[in-house]
Amino acid sequence: MHLLLIGHGYLGQAIMHQFQQTGWVVTPVSLGGGHAASACDVGDAQAVTALRDACTPDLIIHCAASGHGGAAAYQRVYVDGCRHLRGAFPGIPVLFTSSSSVYAQTDGSVVTEESPALPTRDTGLLLLEAEALTLEGGGIVARLAGIYGPGRSVILKKFFDGEAVIEDDGGRYLNQIHRDDAVSAIHHLATHSTAYRGGVFNVSDSAPLTQLSCYQHLCALFDQPLPPSAPRDVNRKRGWTHKQVSNARLQATGWRPQFPSFLDAVPAIARTL
Image 1 (cartoon, rainbow, N blue to C red):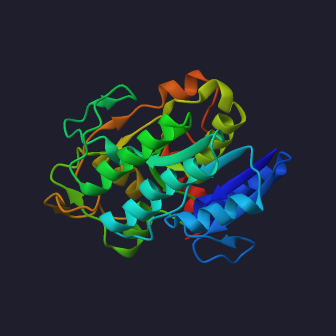
Image 2 (image 1 turned 180 degrees about the horizontal axis):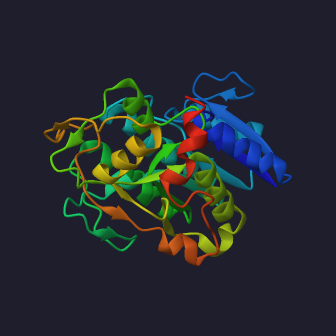
Image 3 (image 1 turned 135 degrees about the vertical axis):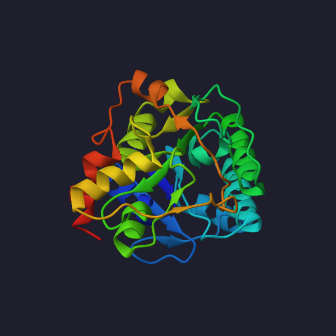
């Protein structure tokens, strides 16, 4: 089996290694190339056409990052990218890694794939457009929660650097997924792609934590004082939300996270930061 992997960063490199370990041939692609990846701008139709001439994949995974860009970058990388991949590789399923940020709920409710996805930011609306293109082509959408893993955790880094704050009363829920669990979920969906084509799946851990509970546990674990309180950051790039992302649909397919809670992984992650 041949995988065309669009995106070769923190998540993409781990995906490549997982698929290679299970016998797949992987052709990795990134915007600038390097580190064994070919260079291709998926926002450029001609570049994607040239990519088609170089390989014949059985599956495409689009997990490229926007490079911390705004709406213009989301349009080019996600919407135009998905459109160009569909056009150049008709009939080849695409697995698109979207984001649970498309859920804009602010009431702390549990959100499933059936819950309204009504993002308030342009970036979220563009992700939904890319999702629609993927699903129209018979692909799969994986809505990932915030990714952390070896060498990477926004929460832990801010905590250790003294930059953490507890917003309002600390009741806002944090939804996360360990990088390795995200990879295993993507591999699981990809290797059963015929069964799950046209489906949307939340990829999150099993125990969303309130901000207060998370920091209370970290303080007890590392013998640190509780971070100060501050007003909520309503200007967050993907919008301020308060919800519990459910992974029940994904678990019903047989997938299980190695780290059901962020707290399960904290000791090992802390040593890598």
